[in-house]
Length: 253
Image (cartoon, rainbow, N blue to C red; front, side, top):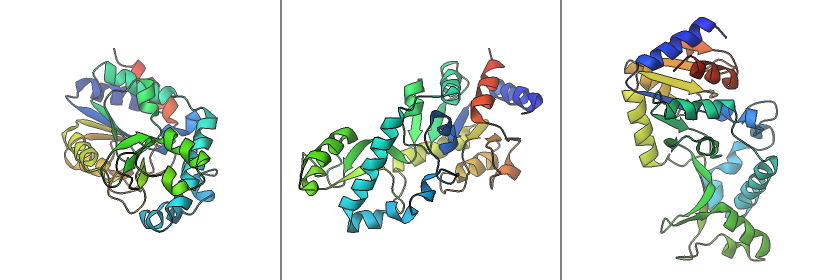
């Protein structure tokens, strides 16, 4: 990690009227949660097609079963926010960062104290009714699913009786309209846009870095591996996000 790059990025944040961050799975791996494409990633254990919306329509019970097993697995890891989450919360609190746009569904940004979090891929705290839009805690659905011999009823909306789906966005589903609109606005308006722990390969979220660059932002990519947007970035830091973000925060009053 170049000290000069850290100081320059901090200087840009200090001068910026608006700044935002985009976080990917690499921000949560330091909290013990697996990423998708790494050596222990989820795609080593599952086919991404297992989480496609069409499979959910065809075999909702099987998809619910897998997702709730992953939910329990994540809870058993007892993940806590790490230094990168905490640094982003500090940057927001101190007025250097307007919001965090995240591809993650784990809620660790909110737990660390970030107040303006745009969840591009939804979350795994809730289930949502596909008909009436009512939400309820995923934990409640999990408990019913365990106890109810007729699992179709366990995943039915208590308000209208129709089917619930997990709050996380499945493959083949559009991103939540309001969240994506806000994310684009943040990217377009930012003087500094920091992409953290993301391979920047999953569209349309990945394109936010390019959108920010196209509208004149200083883009910083913090990721162990190369990304398709490195050439458009002013800063490319091949270091752990838990080292870079605290170092940037320490440079700012």
